[in-house]
Image (cartoon, rainbow, N blue to C red; front, side, top):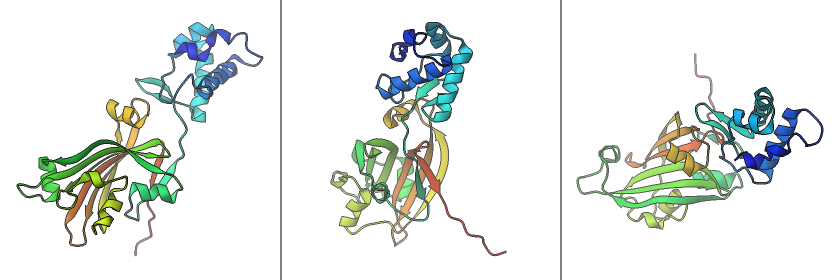
Length: 250
């Protein structure tokens, strides 16, 4: 990985402080593709030894790039390259789908399917969806992308009498349900912060140890029946969840 930085050329590069030269070398490696989003930078000691500069100089260059948003430090894991992503604000006042949210922003939503089919429900799914003894559950697991950039990891479960064939979903679940005359009218959401597992960071293309926003949703039909339970993990570097509050009566 240190070869990507061309550290042997640092001392003979143009004028200016060494930390600026190193900063430019890292920026150039990212711009030219020698360093990719999610790649780990060599240890500061290794960079200092190979470039024949002090660790203080290396730390200064990396600090500047962390502040610029090109690098991110993960305690216990190292320093990683991050591709800047547009931050998106999602209001919590409307019940919408990911596809609808992205379309409203002028972005193209798509999915990378990981699991899609009918399964025997887990005890938790049976309880939350109010399933009978012989009912199955339609379960879908996918990475949601906006303009081909992974944004969220989404797992959704529905009763099989509401979604009997998960293969009919092209991209938007709610659009597929709309086509058969079924759509939730309200939902409860629980939002919390979490750390992604190693497998989840790979799926979302973020460095190890990254954080995410966990959004758990229970959606209801107009009859009051639970029709969907889901959990979505949103990249915390890309998504802000926004709520508008009004002052209550004294």
